[in-house]
Amino acid sequence: MEPLQLTAEQSPLLFLELLYKLRVRDVMAKDLVTIARSATMRDLKRLMQERKVSGVPVVENKRLYGIVSIEDLIQALEKNRMDAPVSEFMAPNAVTVEENMPLSIVMSYFNKYDYRRFPVLNASNEPVGIITARSINSRLLMELFRELARIENQYVLPVDDNATCYFKTYRIQKADFDNAGKASTEIKNVLRDRGIAAKTIRRVAIAAYELEINLAVHSDGGTLTFRADEDEIQIVSKDQGPGIADVSLAMKEGWTTANEWVKAMGFGAGMGLPNAKRVADEFHIASALGVGTNVTARFILPKAVPTPPASLPTAAVPGA
Amino acid sequence: MKLSELLQAVEAEVLWSDPAHDATDVANVISSDLMSDVLMMDAEQPLLLSSLVSDQSLRTANVVGAVALVVANGKIPPPNMVELAQELGITLARTEMAKFEASVALGKALGR
Ligand SMILES: Nc1ncnc2c1ncn2[C@@H]1O[C@H](COP(=O)(O)OP(=O)(O)OP(=O)(O)O)[C@@H](O)[C@H]1O
Ligand SMILES: [Mg+2]
Image (tube, rainbow over all chains, first blue to last red; front, side):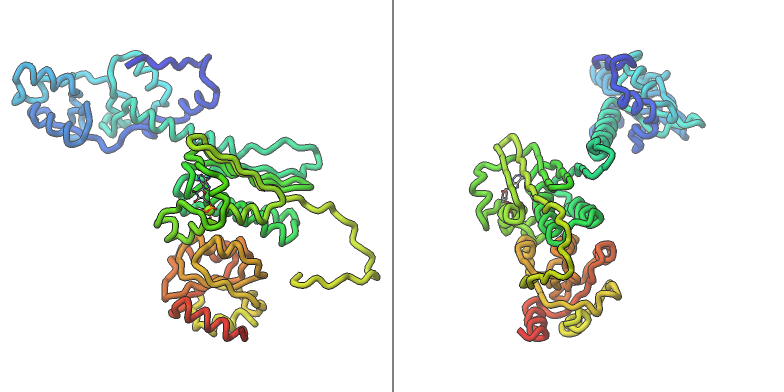
């Protein structure tokens, strides 16, 4: 493997923090596949095929005796010694890591030693897992993903001392029906706390919810951004795919590409975009196949009008 | 008409309710399984009747400012839906009646 070039001077601080924060035990594969010293190389071959692993710690009674890898298996095959015990081919002095070590040290091990996996021992020297480039990659990606989402969500526009602007971005996952709609519920609550008129809240919530559901059911996942100023409210939906082939068609009432699964959930009437447009004061949509879709809905808030003197008769408004 | 009276009209079993809702005056019923259709309606404080059992019907009810969601066709909302109803402050009830039958009963109760 190419050495990982991770030096303290070059890495972003957040990343370094992650490398120190994560311990081996957070990253290792815990469903450890092991083999006994007396097992044959043929047994090893079967085990590797079944469990889809390329290196197996040799363990008996919670004690690590060595590690045997696919390279050792090839040796046995070449020498036609598949019935020989694993103990003959294993590397007896496996380099191990301790479960409490920070990930940063393990990264340096990958550079220092030419091994692709390290058995993990607990404080009593019992093997409890294995760490591979793959287990590190997936965990790091997950952590980075989470961290980025956190940063995105935390990003609140710096505002003046009057601090009347509210800004929040929600990440909407593809096909995540359990969480779809949560952002819109929260947006509704924020607007209520800001004292926005009920009718306006309803319009904004409708647009937010339709766009949020569209992100969950039609896009590969994206973001819903909500911004409330003194004089306007904006809902922006953004995703990076798959995009809409014909936007004017998508804006037609009743036009949908929703599948049966989406319809079973109560969506897919082809009304969402037209409805979001209907409730908004301004509506923009831009989309391209393979690029993604951006939708903006704007709501203009009425200027705070001074309340009329009580003596003036107010006209009755039907339905108000 | 009071919400409690409308719920009686469909012999509803109430799964969660805000006691303050019982006396709420409800003049509109939306009966639909298509959430976008519900979101198109301009009804004040409606009661939503649907045969869908999903968080999304509650969230939709919340967006349109519904006081209650009645699940028709004898379906049983799972516990997490009851929790969500409480979180959103929406009365959640169920009825053994089919959606159509329940719509008729609610319509009659409202004198339509
Ligand atoms: N973010 C998006 N990414 C890709 N395609 C989208 C996106 N939003 C909408 N579409 C496409 O536009 C069509 C119309 O969307 P619209 O919201 O109007 O209706 P729908 O989602 O199909 O049904 P409904 O909103 O009534 O539940 C969708 O069926 C889908 O093909
Ligand atoms: Mg839609």
